[in-house]
Length: 255
Image (cartoon, rainbow, N blue to C red; front, side):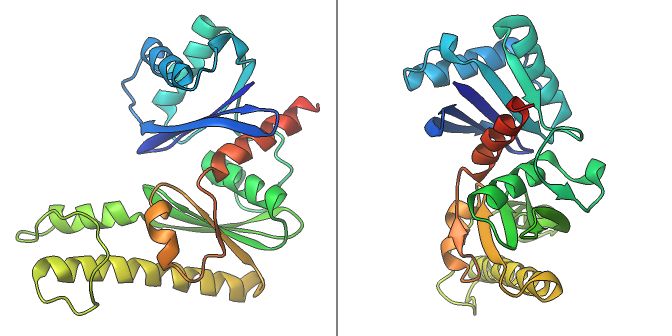
């Protein structure tokens, strides 16, 4: 069995694959202070929840944008579990030709691009609704062309609260109308419709620049809430990153 781990700024996603089947997936808060022992206890309990014996985990693959968390996970695999593992970084075989600066492209963006390219094919725009929202362009020749990065919707709401004197902290909700009749309704409207418009503008400009026929694939924690309101998204895959990690592991096992 293969353990896949994607460490994001806010959340960490795990998945266990047996061949092509995803046996289970989990999402927890990312912590830079969690030790290798704590990671071991946490991962072990999640596996037990799905009746997956730790002894059947043959290897692991990790992508991370949080170096301290990655270090602890590597220590877990080296000193505690003693299993083979692969970290997605420059030099790892992905099947993509990266036209952007390789050392500056986050591992999560590369993993998502690999998954979309191998699962769906064609010209693609991949949106990851996470702490930041990323947009990546991938050609039908599996060329990673680059993309755009915007603040995530959660960051936008927090910024309104933290950087203003009188605006309250609010939950993210679908506004009843665009014209808000109270401060709360106005905040909901501005962020929600503004965010959907941000995505539409970036997707539209990307299509004009490289492919009007590009399919738009979305993923990410906030995407669960947002994707059904975004008419420019063709498909939402909540486990796209985990699928990409599995594909990259397979490519590197063939060496």
